Image 1 (cartoon, rainbow, N blue to C red):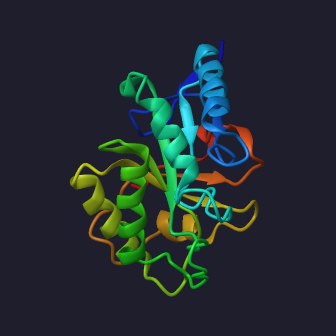
Image 2: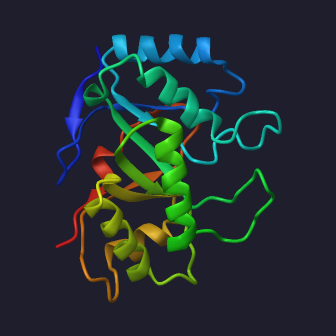
Amino acid sequence: MLSKSTLAKTDLTVSRLCYGTNMLGTAIDQAGANAILDKFAELGGNFIDSARSYGDWIPDAPKGASERAVGAWLKGRNRADFVIATKGGFFDLRVGDYRNRVTPDDIDSDLNESLEHLGVDTIDLYWLHMDNPETPVAELIDFLNEAKAAGKIHWFGATHAAGCPPVAVRMIVPSGARHRPSIVTFGRGSFGLKRSPVATTKPLT
């Protein structure tokens, strides 16, 4: 059975392996997705990661195919048993929008679509998928805190490429934000199982 750890400075208890669902709903159909997630849960896995953009590069797939596949599977499960993470602020691949979308308005749009696709009221852990140096980090933190206060997300953080974590660094030392929350950073890895970001949690004080 997979062991579990509590992410530092949060109330999230997660399996030490997180299942990345990039291929669900596209290369892996719903039946296959159900079988994989069933086995992951059977082995003690409870940490599932997706992204608003996953699957949007497949023209005939539904928008948000990965999140939809996870959401369909969740309908037959006890929601409280799983920690659901997803990401927003990436390019809008479906319409060919390659501008930097890490802005409060674009993240708001992605977040609301993710909630709909996943069929949940709250996302346990919401990642910013990339950085935008032109957006003041205080604006991002304030927006994410507002989303948290509204019950749309529980915790938030940032993904980053190994050795190049600009948004994570900017969030750890924000300038002008009204609040300074704890965040979690997570290095991007390969598709499928990935190590949970227990060791990289960085509390703000």
